[in-house]
Image (cartoon, rainbow over all chains, first blue to last red; front, side, top):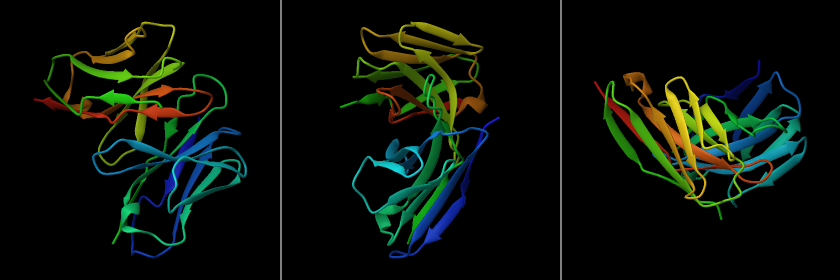
Length: 113
Length: 110
């Protein structure tokens, strides 16, 4: 069966520090991968998605970047965090065919102070 | 662009039925989904419906789709305290991406 992991689970970082959040998927090949941000009490904002290694699409201009160095690894990064980067970051995967349902990881709670 | 709307809050008594509503704007949606999010956790897929269907039932969950009105609903029968969570509807437009509603916070009163 497929599983999706995210780490760390929680992170507190000072403004101006770098960021690296990691997401890995097991039990499937060539998944589509997604990064979302969820602000407190709000819906999901799609940040990036990837349909293959090295292929990244950005949905909104921002302080963050994403990379996919391996088929089942998706990394969210920033060189200098802003206060507004605080939120709950969710990684998800979907199969390349079928109904397109996305399966979510447990999330990373990021607080920028 | 795609716009998916939901009421923000719903309260029901334990044992009653809950109905969570969602409206969307893109008539080319191929699939529509319902997700559940418990506090501090990721989203859990509950069910989905293909756009050429108008109803799908899965145990206590019933999904109704009115494609003409672009209205989707999720009915939870015999609502339990463990059903308290935020529920998101989402639509699939195009090949890969889903567009999510703002979420409905369901509170079940014992």
